[in-house]
Length: 158
Image (cartoon, rainbow, N blue to C red; front, side, top):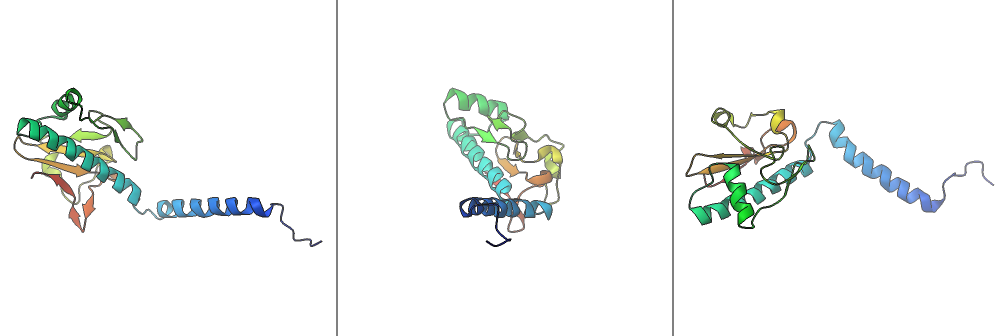
């Protein structure tokens, strides 16, 4: 018998190898400080869901909601509310949960550009309306605004 025998059976080696490789794949981007595509995709999905909800409100009222509260009340009353999830804070709930979706105020909205970042917004969807048009923004890690093809990702009827 060889003195170099393994303490693990061959059946146990494969699952350990798979788990080890999975951990390496998961932690390397984090260790290198790379953005997680899954986080951005989750925020973008929230933006898509929220846009659907706002568009349903517009089809009923012929203008965007003035506030998330108005949208939430109409969506609950008319059964088109959705559940959202913040991939960074792990909060889940309705659109009126400030840990998931925020309404920008008049002071914040002009600051929204490709360089904008605030940890207060990490993983959230932001909403802005001035009565006729509305715009949605997504915030990834560190609260940076999501971009696509080197342009700020915006959804709405702007």
